[in-house]
Length: 290
Image 1 (cartoon, rainbow, N blue to C red):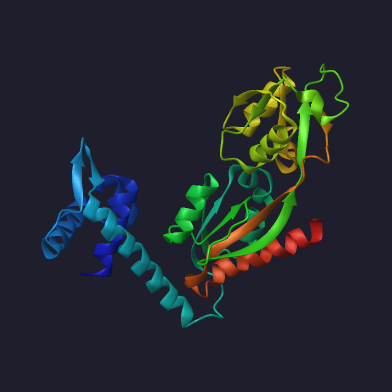
Image 2: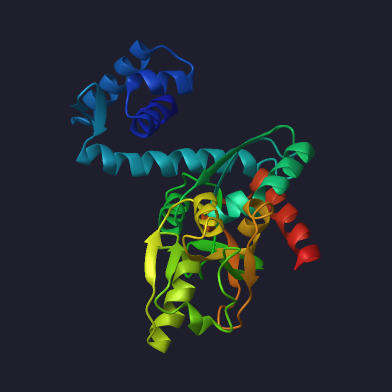
C-alpha cells in the first residue's frame, strides 16, 4: 500500500470517474486503474462498483476512504510540523457559507492572493452541516459558518457579527415594526440557513405567519424584492454586494440580532502556515471593521 494509491482512491471517489481523477492527478487513466486493482487485491475487497459510465464507491470503499483522508492529512501535517516558520505555500482549502463567500470574502481573498502568491487557494461553498463534516474528515482546512460550533475536535475563532436587514421594494408601504410582515410574502434562503432561523424563531415566539418562498440565490432574492414580489431578510454584506443599484427600502429591527460568523478548523491538523495566515488576515480585517 502506497500513498499514491491512497491519493488515487480519494481522487476517484471525489470525481466519480477514473478519467476525471487522472486529469486531477496529472497521470494516465490506465495507471490509476492498475494501481486501484492492485490495492483491491491486497485488501481482498472491491473499493468501487460500476455506475453507468462512472464509478461509485462501495461500502468497503467508504470505510477505507475515511482512513485515506486521515492518513493523507497526517502526511501533510508531518511535512508542516518540521517547518512551522516557512512562508505560507501549497494548497489551502477553504469552505464558506454562501452569504460570506459572496458578501464578505471576495476582497479578502484578493488580499490573501497578493500577500501569499505561493498558496493555491480553493474556495468551496455549502451549507454549514456539510462544511463541518468536510472539516472533520479533512476535506477542508478551514471553513466559515454562522452557527455556534460545539465539537471537541473543532477549533473556532470568532470573526464578525453579520447584521440582518429587512428589505422591501420601492412601492411597498413603510413598515412601522417587524410585526407588519405578518401574512406577507417573504423570500428566504432554504431551510438550514442561520439567518432564516433567526427570523423563524422570532415568528414562532410571536405566533405570526408569513408566506415563505425559498430561493437558494441571494441575487435572485434581492431582484424579486426589487421587482415588488415580496419582502426578504438578507445579511448586510449581501445587500452591499447586490443591492447597490436597486431602489430598496431597508429596515434594521432589534428583534433580529446580528449573527456571529466563525472560522473553524480541525484541532488535529497542528501547524498549517497557509491556514494560520488566512486566519490572521481575517482577524486583522474584522478587528478594524466591527
